[in-house]
Length: 487
Ligand code: SF4
Ligand code: SF4
View 1 (cartoon, rainbow, N blue to C red):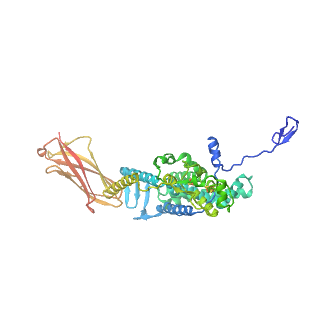
View 2: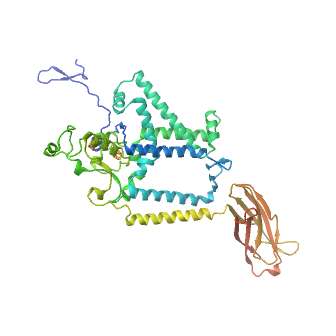
View 3: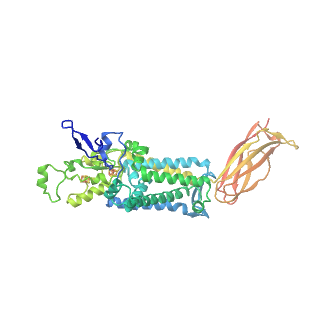
């Protein structure tokens, strides 16, 4: 009996015709695979390395932000970690500023301003955040760099993946994943180091002395980094990140986008480098030589010649690739470029349009309010709790007494001595400690009472003011209103 794998019956002759089993090649097929059938499993994208001005710019920009990210937690300020978002102690130290849970509005305000600034940048320059600053893109490019150094260029990587496992392939894959894991682990340790003292974290983690929470966090974020930058890559941008979905709302005809000049490029087609212009015109050929390089360098695997697509992260890799091709062909650069819809239509691009001016004014007001809030912020908080058991009591001297508990929170980063005074009643008697010392971050609980001759009270409820002022710096002062009750 014939082997069904290798033969096919010929009905006419009854003979078996040899057939060849062809394994599908698992290489990236950018658009056809994607658009023919939405349920087609994702094919791996073998990103081709590219050289050019934008790539150089991204590397410098990315390098600068990586240095910031890795360096900030190691900075010291006033004898402690300068930036420490201490969740366990419920306080965030940012250089000389300490934010408490009560200051969450400041944090919310900072996030709102950051989001709004991102919208403004997107309106002007499209998704440059995604292409040049987003950690997902930066880390993906770093992971691809290891892939390129260990497994070789795009063609070698495709061949390596098609090949059956052998010693060389095993070693290359092992080394690549090892480098990825080390980079992911260092990233994770640095990230967790923003939330717990980083020096101790590094030592404790590598000597197995870290707490279960710290170890678990480091392992979790290592897995996230390895998975996102090593395996998920463009899926994060095209399927998970919500920003990709609503960016188009912010776009207008003047927004900078990466676009292919179809008028100039079409009809696309291969040709010799020395084909004269007349011959090209005769054949109706545009400037696109259909080399597919712009697709091969694209980290999200799209063909920008199909127009603006939500997957495009404005990384400019296709711009560099195409400019390189244009240079070799002696054609003008810019067949693919950062441009605007208006420019593509032959109109002028307006950067400072009325919408932009409005956005910038709103942004300036928001930043101004935040700065004013931070500058006028007093690092002291006082809570007054009245005695709930009795509204008032009469003491042995026949005076009416009200009891209060003061919670004095020193929100600064140094010890202060505070003076407590009460005003608002004639000839009042202050009973209790009137000078206390609270360490940095301490909540001092101070019970006090206020006594008054009932003959001097004009009503059942009198407004009083309890003041707390730091003796070392009188600008650190809080006045809190309360009530003195009788009958
Ligand atoms: S790189 Fe430029 S020339 Fe090559 S296919 Fe893309 S658009 Fe055409
Ligand atoms: S189309 Fe060009 S700019 Fe957009 S993601 Fe791909 S390479 Fe980057």
